[in-house]
Length: 193
Image (tube, rainbow, N blue to C red; front, side):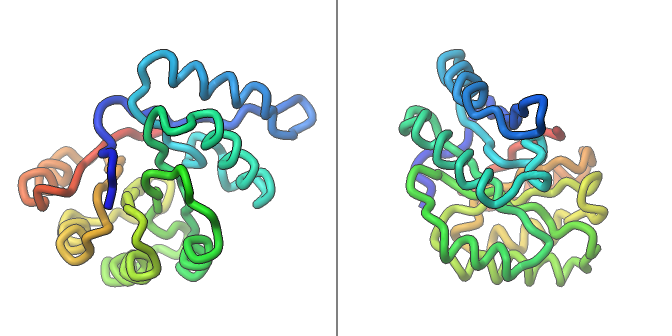
């Protein structure tokens, strides 16, 4: 499964833009190299901080390729592939090349405000579509719905390839519940960006 666990300090990589709104790929490469050279333990690519919803599919693919090439295996890469459409995430997992990616980050579906069972079914379909390690992303301030500790723990127990959660709810009691009751091979990382 996940060969390199996401431990230590991970950096949510921004997407630099030129004045005309196009992606500044040269600055992106410099940012990646700066992070690697200065002790970052892993990179989160194409997450919230990257302004991913504003990027075209072509831009996302180019960013992914450039970061993977530049990192060249020196540190783990956590790649965001979130969508509020379950089938879009499943299709991405089936059709894209994830060579060089250590795990994928998938946020709770946004806008639709699914029930806890709906959240579970979203991640179940994704976990069953791939052998890649999956990191759940609970960021209710952005998605409009909180994934409870119960749902998180159910997913962690039911699917071996669901290996971690990026818990950004800000709810310390919920985080404590997850940490105290999680399987040994399930990691909890945190940050709200």
